[in-house]
Structure formats: structure tokens, C-alpha cells
Image 1 (cartoon, rainbow, N blue to C red):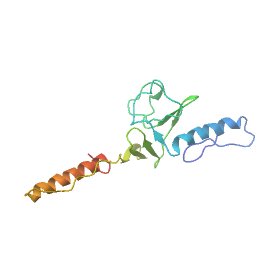
Image 2: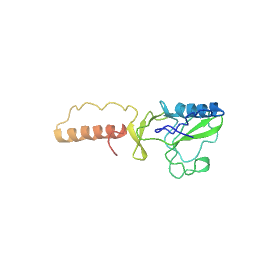
Image 3: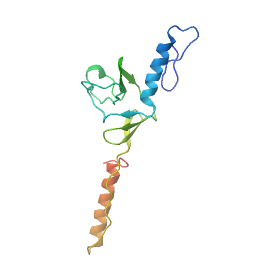
Image 4: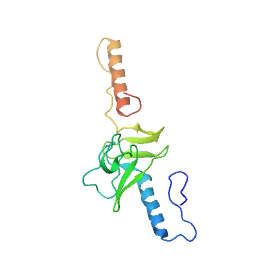
Length: 151
């Protein structure tokens, strides 16, 4: 079976029997990756009672049906788990945290976290150096919380 070059979706061939199977599998894959939204940060074990349509990221050291599939996107469908091997540039929204992830160089990386509280304006005090350090520390903490710089 021939597949698309980027997502590996099965394509139809002339005279193919049961074309609906190939088309439905491709639609399931597209439903997972187009505007991808995962339930929570990466996890190593499948949920006990997944809901149809729920999608996750498999963490290292996965167990059960997810064993050996680190980094992949398992999406639960009426037919069970369907796994998507991510490609460079694929982005996903994490529903539980509001973070945005991107798959790059073989791993998922944070792009942006959920919006954090504003940093308070500097006021009062007599030692400018201490105030400046406190404000810079708060700014760095906020940038780290947003995932814009490493912790």
C-alpha cells in the first residue's frame, strides 16, 4: 500500500477492494493531528477507561498497549488505540495545562505555557540594586513558567 510522504496516510489505488477502510483510517489519523489536542502531559500508562476521541503522548518507559511507543500520539477510537508517529513541526495543545508542544528533533518541546500572572511594577525601597534583582528574578520565573526559557 502506498502512503503519503509526511503522515504516512494510506492512499487509494485503482481497483482496491474495501476502499472505505483506507479512507476511514486516514480520516482517523487526520482527526488526531489536525489541531491536535492532548488530554495531559506525557504519560507512561494508558488510562483505564479512555473516552473515544481522547489523545495522549506516550512517555518513556511506557507499559501495556503503549509499550515501545514513546513520543507517539495514541488516540482512542471505537476500534481501540490508533498510534500516530509524530513528524517534525507537529504541534499539540495540552488541555489540562494550556501549554503548547511541538515535536522537533525527535522529542516534544514546550512552546508556550498557560498565561501567568502579571509581574508587579517595582515600587518603593531605597536600594535600587535589590529592587532590580527582585524584578529580574520575577521576570525570569515568568519566562520559565511560559516555557520560553529553560528552567
